[in-house]
Image (cartoon, rainbow, N blue to C red; front, side):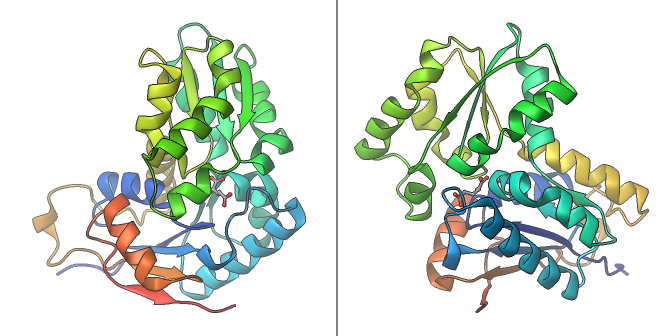
Length: 273
Ligand code: DGL
């Protein structure tokens, strides 16, 4: 008989956090998740930090009410604007995606010259530079904001000519800086990885925080001794039930979510603020 595990709560402004969800599902196949995509209020990147903070706290409260035993802020903009306040607000572990992104870059780089791309809010906040000087002071970080990328992902347009033209313009400072590693400092950007690679060159290693964040979640679950065994699926009678909520269009979320993340994004609940 299978034990019922409390879900891990995950949120983002929209679909981007599903890149982190995918990594968590792969690493922790027995762990139920509850995901909130704030598609009705996206994008967070251009919004002032106090507004992103307010939304992040609202979503955190909702996930806790729904029984989340941990919160994963699967959004760099929300991590930059709200991580510490969320940690102060709730009694469960709260994990952001910026530190894991820096750790992934540190593992990948040989030259120590690393690019970071993110939303205007994330880059302007200086959160990556602060995490860099704390975790890896020798890294030389070159940061660039990429306004517009998130909107393309949310509309499902991930490899059009328009995305390519925008990427060429926005990534020019990264190309000029001759980095050997590029942190995708927005959870939407892994969905644009092919276009980004075409622009920056195949010798630049793209890293996202998804895998590293999933490992951090596993460590916390083990500490809570509520970890779902990552052994064979047959150890459990049925696959875990994941819950997906969106404040936007449920049909679009389901269609794109399934395409970007997998068949697990089957049932999407509507949420209205
Ligand atoms: N995916 C988010 C991030 O990692 C948010 C993007 C947005 O809403 O602008 O920053």
